[in-house]
Each structure stands twice: as C-alpha cells, then as structure tokens.
Amino acid sequence: MPEKQTQAPVVTVDGPGGSGKGTIAMRLAEHLGWHFLDSGALYRLVAVAAMDRGVSADDEETLGRVARSLDANFGISEEGMVVLLDGNYITGRLRSETVSVFSSRIAAFPFVREALIVRQRAFRKPPGLVADGRDMGTVIFPDAKLKIFLTASAEARAERRYKQLKEKGESVNLTRLFQDIKKRDERDSTRAVSPLRPAEDAHVIDSTELSINEVLREIHVLLEKNGIS
Ligand code: C5P
Image 1: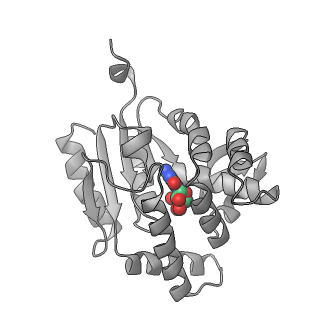
Image 2: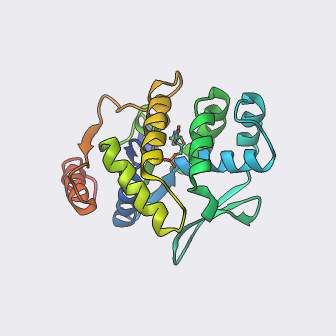
C-alpha cells in the first residue's frame, strides 16, 4: 500500500503573521481532537536559542546547527501552549517583536529550513494533525487533506498584533508594527526557499472583515465537504 494512505490526515493553515491562523488552527485541532503544530514556534525557538548563544542572524551555517540540535518541548497549561528550550520555560519571550524579526530573517536560510523539516513532519500522528505556518501546504505536507490559506490586509494584521502585544504589557508603536509586518511579508514572500504563497489546491480566506468565528464557520463547511469531522 502506498505510504500516503497509511499516514494520519493533515489540515494545513498557512498565511502571513496576524492573519489569525494561529488561533484558527488551534481551535480546529481542538474541535477535531487532532494534534497541533505551530511551525512558527520552531523558527522562533531557533531564534531564541541563537540569540542566547550570541549567534549572528547572518551566520547560516551555525544557525543550521542550532536548528538541528534544538532541545525543544511543547506542553499545554491552563494559560495555553507552554514552550521549553533546554528545559527552561521561554513561552513569554517567544512572541516578542525582537524574536519575530530575528526568526523571519533566519527562516530565509535553506540550512535552517532543512533542519526543521523532519521535526515538523514528526508531529503527524493519528488521529490527525492541524499544521499552522507558511509552507505547510506547499512543502511540508503537500498531501494534506485540506489546505487553508488565511490572509488579511497588512493594516488589519498590524492592529491585531498591536492589541495582542499591548495586552501583554509590551510597549508598542502601531506605525512601527505596520512597517515590520510589511517588511516581514516582503521577506517571507520573496525568499528563494519555501516562499509564503498559497498552495495551488489551497482555499484562500481573507479575514480582514471577518471575526474568528466567521472564519471558523467557513472552514467547517470545507471540512464537511472534504469528509473530515
Ligand atoms: O508564524 P510566526 O509569526 O510565529 O512565524 C515566525 C517566523 O517564522 C515568520 O516570520 C516566518 O518568517 C517564519 N516561518 C516560516 N515558515 C513557517 C513558519 C514560520 O518561514 N512554516
């Protein structure tokens, strides 16, 4: 029997930062009772590990080694996902703007991306996986049962991110965030390896004018159409 048929089913949710894909993917995983992969967290973990070791964001070879030897663990607490690096809780640092910018820079390096491929595919286990990222449907799980590409205007995404960071007590500037988002979009979409783009068979949903629940309703229709429940 071909390998594909024996593998657990996958739903991919790709898109730019701030499109709501993280929340949507987590809610879908909960709804289906499937595993959840936040692939961006892996790139962020490499960024934190590299920053702590004083590795430059330009040193592709060392960054590749950091990615390969990453000692990372994920867990769930009452507050949501917790992340451990080398046995230390680093959940709070993971979403800071500094880490966002560093992770987006190093994600352009083939050495870093290759080092994370096996790690990402290892999340695919029965009964199924919901995978959130940029290249889940195009590169990591091209045989996914359902592929969603969630997008939103850069303005809407900057505002969402602004609210999130404010709630966490980070001091933020909306104009600066908007510029950072535009820069990251540009870097993510124009890089030579695994650029951010919808897979040919992805369903594109623009969430600019939609609430999380409205997006989820659209996806539930697609789940049903694809025989996933
Ligand atoms: O999704 P999140 O914003 O946490 O991802 C952090 C960074 O990691 C992104 O800016 C992107 O450059 C990179 N990334 C990627 N491929 C993925 C997930 C994230 O290149 N599958």
